[in-house]
Image (tube, rainbow over all chains, first blue to last red; front, side, top):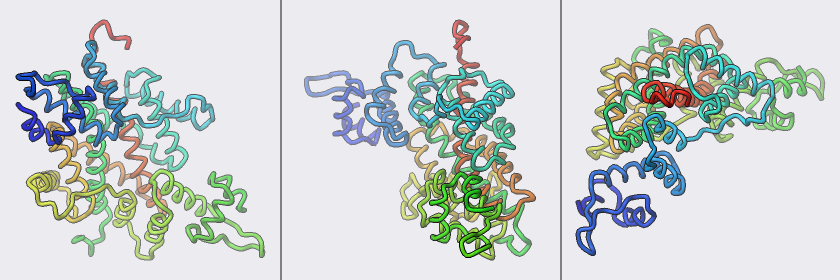
Length: 214
Length: 214
């Protein structure tokens, strides 16, 4: 397809596409004459990935370049894909130098969680540390939330099963696009559905007889 | 307890507590002499709620005042608690005037979701509209994510069951505190656990024989 069609298909303005080409974010099209090039479905797909990273992931152009370099690396394989995608959405972790009782208790709770659920992950993987930080904050502000940690982990494990299932039979480039979008949009989807489901459950449980038409 | 102990117990500096008292966010203590007052566990709890709203929820002081007014309202009852808490964490919704094909398709998908899962919620409830917006974005950027929408909704319904279960047998004030903290911190917890579980599932599924010590 020509540039104009690429713009239409992807929803990205021509000037922006030209900018991505100059910056090397988008690979050049196949040149068909000195002034024209032909673009493929791969270009549409790559433009979508760039938009997802910039607009939904809130990444800087420099970070997008980094992710795309990782995506384009010759040695990219499936077991690295979640690592690449997760690096795009880094939650802050617990300060490694923090050896307060508080921080240590959170690290121990995470360790127990990993063991109990047989989640085999490198203990120094950034998301493990990010999880420790969330748990430390909960311990401080509202520790009752941790009473159901195992039940919640069980359900989230099933969400992760769905996440991985979605990648089956797709190209690596497609997988990266899905994982990046699925990380950011998937979180937003879970939060939004949870709010709606809470209202349903709360109404069923707590509504008084004269409130049933809430 | 005296002011100094309230500060120690809550982790909030004395100067900040005095500021909250002046602003009316924290009710006055029981006066025991012209210069001294006594504070209760309720004050510790209220300070925690204020911190959760400000620091974790990212609310302004004006918004915190609004939430606390709702919490203190005489007619607060259980079926309103999620509404109060959800108002503190508003995700943007779909523009009601947006009648593009795109927006309408998202609204229809949400409607079908509510019917299929028997989630009984007022259709004009803000979280329903926020869910429509997330689905509209997914449809645009990575529609394959919607293939598993029902399976995900099933799991999130079980998360909401846990959320509501946690409130049983607690005072209204405690319930509000839990719901507010649980809304914000619960989202962060789900996201963090999901990242960790993804790495586990991905490693099990995709790791090549020579990678098993990743």
